Length: 369
Image (cartoon, rainbow, N blue to C red; front, side, top):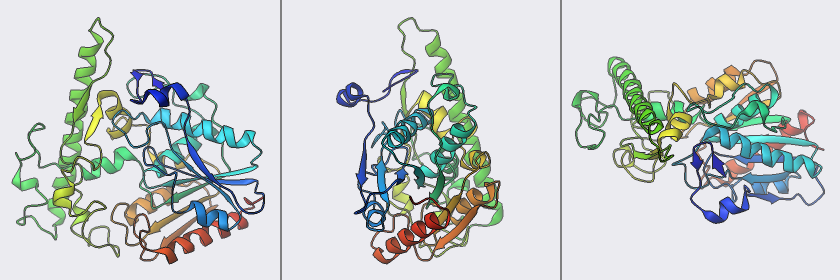
């Protein structure tokens, strides 16, 4: 549980155990197929699909990485190692077919994993630290599913970063011309505003990255061995699509998974406010992170199912299309879940539909044994 930059998990118990945890829901009859649902940091031990899949005759695993519930020091390359450890564990226990489901932020991770399992290329993190994935044990899986998923944490973070913030230490200092919450700008938002907004988001992210690299260079000069530091990022839930549903049009309602966008943007518990220098490069920097879902899907060669909710407030139709269109072969399927929200909360009929669709797809692909 230690990254190249040192300790990356606060819990001493977790570090001593040296394990990642998952929950296995067994089918009534013995199954040699395991479906594994994973996310870089969300707790999936009680994922809503585990019981329904087991009821339909497939063993289901809710997998956590070492960074469960705390992504402040998360290194995407270590998440790949954690998924590999779980896949190896299941292979050793006799599972003949293993299918990875990347839900939400898990979509980019599962693509990254399979890409490196099939043809490893990543020899270090963006900060130059271990692990070297070309030397890691990464057993390939037999099928991939992207479920209500976006293409990668760095990609979606750049789409959500608030460009109106002009003082990284004071989010109340704002550029009104780039403020999606200023009614003079919309919604609806003009194409010209959206173009300027997107360019300013990218520019802000790159300014943060430049400062990160400066601080890392300063740490390299220290004699005490300190190689990482934490920092705070304000304004991380400010995508114009949260308020203007004509952008990337779908059945969703305005707002976010955490409530109104104007407050969610600054809430401590929302996306990526707390991070470290090295984690920023691996997890949030759009120019540096290795976790680019479409890029890695284009390097995979196995049956792939992409499902998306038409009322999802987090992952939009263009996210699903970018994942689907990146798949370099015809053994792929794109399925909309009509009216589905991000986690199908309060939608038991749609949970059943997703489970039925998934199991039916596994059967047609010969992935149930």
